[in-house]
Length: 151
Image 1 (cartoon, rainbow, N blue to C red):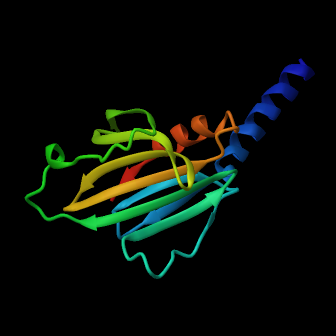
Image 2: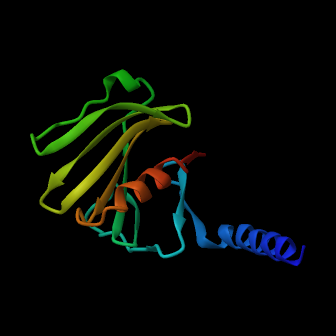
């Protein structure tokens, strides 16, 4: 009986501590927020890139978010990706009822996973750069993008 109580107490403690392991990172300019592990910290965007509105890094992953004004008449069907041949996969998916384009590949900055969508007349692009030797990075990125909340 004492073992059962101890196991239940440990489970409750673990469940209560899990929310402390994450933080919400909001991007007002892009109209979205993501839940990032607490190991992530904000990075100052480079002043020369005005479309860069979201920059975080941690756990071997860098997240760069770009918001580009497109106008109200642009629809998801108008979005396109320029594929360079360095992609290992690309396509379309829906996350939290939002249609997106995605691609995974490498460029001069390293291995990346890209998600792109339209929100309130803005084209949002999220680049996740990661160390390709880190096997759990893609799972972490998947968890992060599925935490997407639109404002």
